[in-house]
Length: 61
Image 1: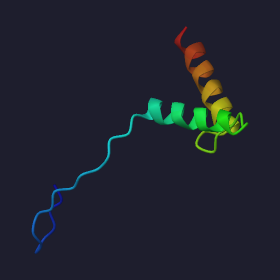
Image 2: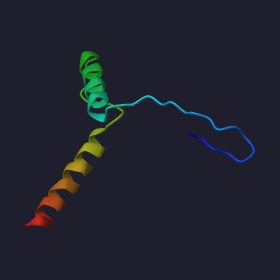
Image 3: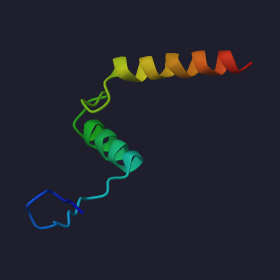
């Protein structure tokens, strides 16, 4: 619900996106077109996430 002073209330509807499904769709599309990297998650982001998770695991114990 969107409420703004001096205007009638509006009901907003948005599409629900499953992040895992969106990632799978992007990967399938990339592989079908002969690519191994997708613009939605470039390798640099993947490597940074992996490094962050490794640091987190190391800090746990």
